[in-house]
Image (cartoon, rainbow, N blue to C red):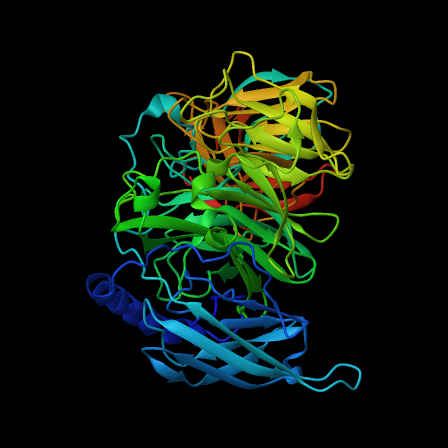
Length: 628
């Protein structure tokens, strides 16, 4: 009932999806009744913060011992020993009673999840016990702990956004693909020294269509996937590695598949075929802020979960709600939740720079607002939180916070220029420094947003600003944004709510600068290498010179191939039948759609096609011949 849904094409049983659907329905019913009958706890935070999750000397468990924020649909995750080393698992709820279930092993071979056969009850205390096999001849160790199930806030959930009226001046149009209307890209700077690689965005918020979008090095369109239904949003499009191959991954809401309309992660191969869909586990929806596939076949995702909470000690309502932002590590092969880290278990509500009001069920107190997860060289996780103005080094074995960079209780003495506000995208670089996209808003705390790099001295516990890049003219991004380190020391900066993307050299020189229309946004922007050949063929449109012109007049053929990266030029073919075509003209590729001029228009009733040619002149794709 509590596994994540992962649907690799042709491999994982589709029966997982319908089995989960009725459980989700039951959860909604349980949550609705519970919100009326179960009072909010005195606090949704545990009595002790940042306690170790390591049990029986070697096992990491979630939900965390003593926590009060577990999902009614949670599984009991146990990492640290092979599944065969776990036995005698007993799970009992104070209201729901004893729970039968299945112990399912992780594909990594280092643990298992106990998946209960029915949900827990909101507000109840759950006791877990198990026996952990002996190590080196020692006696088996007992594992025993308790946690409390949260009362879900049912004030609302994620969904697609409305689309403003379409404005032709803001989007691109193509004769060969009139169905595509991606936002226009205005390039204001492009140096020959700019890095190679495609540009990845996921525009939304403006008029026209929303969807994942790839641009060439020069800012011209390479691929655009308009999402349906209208208003469906995508975010965080990136190139990643899945089962040893390059793939595209993005968050989408809603992602309609397998009987679900919830948000999810879509993964496409280099032919733009969907090879997997990832859903969050434990009854949650994945959030847009992060999705990362790890080398060991797991995925890191962020989740936003509203739960009821007494906020009176902070000046908020006693019957309020909190957005408990958390991370999950999912086993990509089984969909099981290996690990779950809740901000409420480790960071006090008083650390927030956000206000606890209204803190209502419709507008929960977003005290933490996780927005990035990054594996560190040590194996720890670097977790960034917008609303505490801090990044956290987290030990994934125990869940403990080792240090805090920034915020109200920084572990480091913050040097001039190092204090961030409402920041995003904390990443450790190979030299140990930390980069951020520092929004500085909203509300406005800095004159403008910036990309920064901070050096840490872990002995003296000091933080020193070593680099800062700002946009000219100044930009203030109230939300979103990222700083991507490029080979050679440059940065690609996505300005989030401000619809710009900028590449800087190692010395801070602007090498590329472009923007979408002012109404659009893209959560992040990346420059990454991407090579793709679509399964769909190229397409074309023919425009004769002058209305009613005969075959003696000229014509123009407009050719495109949405998503193809290996096209260098186009060849137009024509002839009396589909099987008797000969070359008529060629032209070098010029952007998404290439116009190929014909001195003489094809005779009416004749056949025309186009061929996409690679750099060596070889045919890499051909359109379906069509009578014109």
